[in-house]
Length: 453
Image (cartoon, rainbow, N blue to C red):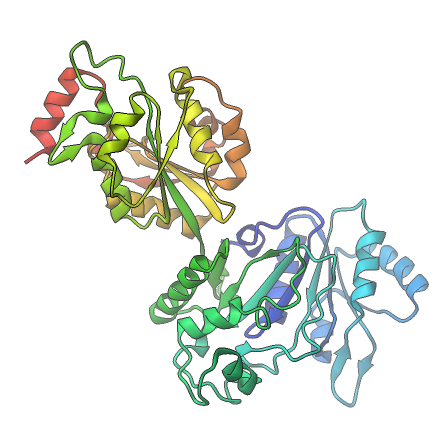
């Protein structure tokens, strides 16, 4: 996954990078991706960077006098898609000074009508993979739209001391830890979430997306994954992990996924004298409890069950289960109403919704986990299972498509979006048993004999 995609970079973003463990590498690699996609970018710093790094960009512009500088930058951007802006270079320290956050704001305002991305290295770390900011740090411009705190995954299992952590005493005091304490995923997550740590000086409206770098082995991926889950539990919306020096810099983008169980329908094809599908016996429970238990056993972070027809009766079989019930008063108007009701019930920290149906008893936690994992690996807008080239349910939709899901009417669900974005769907190939559905009495009797011991 590319950085531009993993960070959900939009138009005219201002990205401020803080922390330690690869800030400069992230800045320049992200700039390369933007240029390769036909965009324009200004890279800069509000602290300092090594003078040698000024040779990485196609052109380096020193900001001296504000009026002349802004005009010169405009001319440079017409010739070069990537311009690095710093203050003067100090030959004695081999560092290029940063520019003021006010000047970053001026650059953004001056280019307001153009699709220009500004990337700011807003922190220093003395080459450490983990740091705590001092009183004067970080220097994040107010116009920042995305803050990316960086941590190097090589910090795990090392000790909390100055050899490994920039300002280790501040870190120890902040978390009430002893000197030389081992650095665990919990320590990293707590430092990132601390208002004087990774959350310091983050503008109110800016998105905050931690990046765990140097994930180049199974153990480091396990540690990074554990850290990501702790961050998600702490209210973070998304966490990206990867290795900036690899061909694909992002291995996974972790985020909360909601399982929305659609259990509101009328079961019109079941025939007379039959229970609605939601209440048909299945094993020791019902079809509704079966799919709900599969969702509970999966890696889904949130579970919603949308009820409508005979909602009072169906809700009784769900008592005591770890889920939220959502009522769709307009259930008779088609499945799209239940889709909207489920989406409207989700909190802002949920990034994707996986829609499950009660009439597919072959769908279990393994398939749900495979779909969620595929979403984390690809960040695709839609993830769906596929059997011999034919798409099946359940289907996951990224938050970026929820507005379009709200526009769907009737009983079509999300099929229209799958057709519209077919070339962007990430597929999970699966066994053909998930194609079976219970729509009639005969289906139910046949599948009961097949699946229930």
